[in-house]
Length: 394
Image 1 (tube, rainbow, N blue to C red):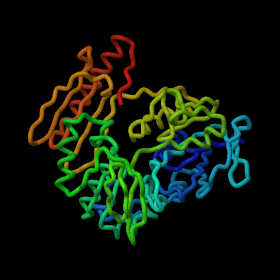
Image 2 (cartoon, rainbow, N blue to C red; image 1 turned 135 degrees about the vertical axis):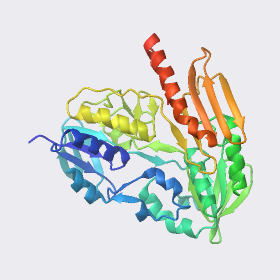
Image 3 (tube, rainbow, N blue to C red; image 1 turned 30 degrees about the vertical axis):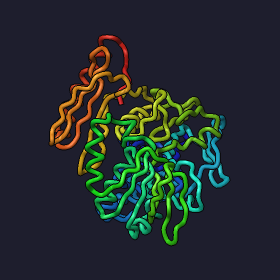
Image 4 (cartoon, rainbow, N blue to C red; image 1 turned 90 degrees about the vertical axis):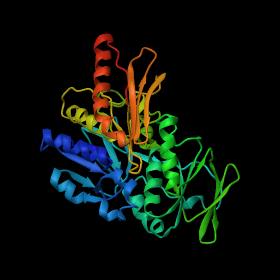
């Protein structure tokens, strides 16, 4: 009997891959090993649970058991993989070997908690999974004051949602602007103003030096000696790919598990997909690359040739009071053509060759996002066809 395809992980990437394979082959054996229950849920919804007053159970779309039954897979829930033997092509779980024909790491990423001192560091919460929210939801529900470490994409979304639910929120961000690595300053300033109007306190240009108990609450000391009293501390300071198992297995790892355009790692018959994968040198922790990657990897697992070619992709900042959408690569931007009005912003970026390389739209101008995305896609494809150069557009 042919050994099954084995997938480590049960998040969006793993589930998308299972669906893709099953569309092409209803019978090939698939085993999924996951450290949790394997429930299916929409992870982006974690940014909106507070204003919607949702519990962890409300987010569950399908239990792991039901997903396994529907897609004819063997689910090993609450099961950790101890080791991977890439020579023998088997994984060890609970002391028992399981052979594989193809192995997929869909191990995701964990929330990063910056180094800090204090006697309450262990009480810092992360919200990168359904299970983490389930553990923390009662504490957050009771809290009146919440401090969020990190003013990036997830931190900003969580902060606005907490403020919308009536919490007093403080955002601590080491950069002097929110979303500093994502969008230009002239776009983010109105967002900062909107957050402040909602009562969010922005401690920009600050790190958290200490987290200490203060009665029934906490006192966080910032790098500029400011002390903030708070009931809950949430770290939303970015993600770190879960690569430990792959590294221990002799698979090449950098920021993530390194894969090529076929999603194959440095080891034959071993692949990676999702937040744990570093695709040709870049981390792409967004839904669209996972969907496109699953289509390519599904074919690879079934013996068909395919390579991942990523088009310009939209990134949405889910801040309802001041929505932002963007696409492109701003590293090469030397000029911004911006239309700024009371209703929002439309900004197009060009490089030194006057090539259209990206855009940002904000406020009520977000309805211009898809026309601009089509224009950007046409521009990129034209460049590829005329020069043979594939410009990386995120």
